[in-house]
Structure formats: C-alpha cells, structure tokens
Length: 193
Image 1 (tube, helix red, strand yellow):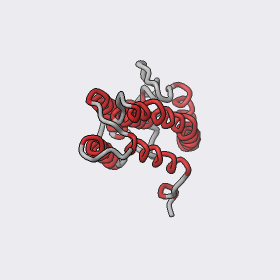
Image 2 (cartoon, helix red, strand yellow):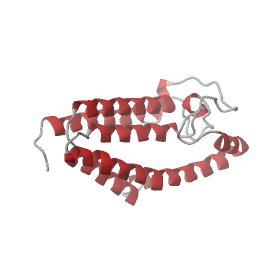
Image 3 (cartoon, one colour):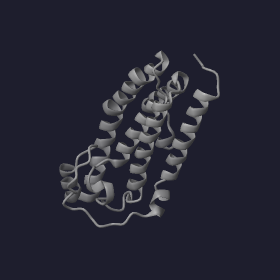
Image 4 (cartoon, helix red, strand yellow):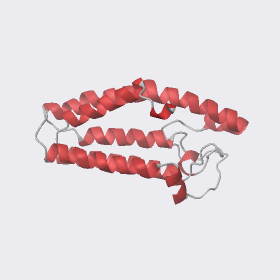
C-alpha cells in the first residue's frame, strides 16, 4: 500500500476533528459567510500556488513561492480556519467549534504536521536543488508572506495545466462539497447533539 494511502495518527486526528466539526456545527449567517470567505481565500492561494508548482522538476520560486515558502500550507490553514468559522455560532455548540476544535486543529497543524512536512520537504529540496534551495529556504518566510520577493525569483507564468497536474481540482471539489455538506448539516438535517 502506498504511504499516501496508509492511515497515520496525523490522518486519524484530522478525520476525528472533521467528524467533530460536523457533529458540533451550528449555523449562524455571519460566521458561515466569514468562514466561506476565508476558505475561498485559502483555495485561491492554493490555486495560485499549484499553477506555478512543478514538483521535483525545478525549484519553484515564482508566483506565491517568491513571497512565502509554503503557500499550499498557508492555503490549507485558511481553509481549515474557514471551515471552523463556518461551523461556529453564538450557541454553546457553535462556540465549542470556535474555542475547542479550531485551537485543536491549529495545535495539530503547527505542533505536528507542519514541522514534520517542513523538515522532510526542506531536506528533499536541498538534496535535489542544492545551494539555490538552501538560499531559498533561508531567505523566504514559512507561512507569513513578505512583500519583497525572493532574490532568485523566476518569471514563470501561472499555468492552468499545472493545477490539474497537482490535483488541486480535487481539493477545490472537496472544499465545495465540504461546505455544501456543512450547510446541509446545519440548515436541513436535525441537530446531532
């Protein structure tokens, strides 16, 4: 079985947080709209990034990669925050999503997933691309973009074909379906708790 298909503790925790979100979710129009807007922003960042990313073929230093080392993780983080906001409300259940699930999701993301992926990917980039990758990893911030682009930025154009090559269309579909299910869960189905 490929490593990407194996159920890891990280995946298990992520799935449990998603299930808890759908069980505890409560609808409030302002929270739902704020969450949807945040998730749309996150998906836009991911689409921009995947349209520049040529995995394992070259060090990507164009588009968002000129300003932030991990735009895909930034986008994912915004999507996660968006889902938690969308499932929040002023009720006790809705506040539980905001005050318990969101911090738990952030703790898993920052405490386990991101440091592990950062180390693995950084090592792989240095092995594959050498000194240029080392300079890139030293100069460019991890998640908070900076205005000044990386000094080694390339002038590559965003390409729609790369979005599909990087399977971002599947992530977009998952986000859309997730929000549709969250809306249905909070507006159509009876409360679970």
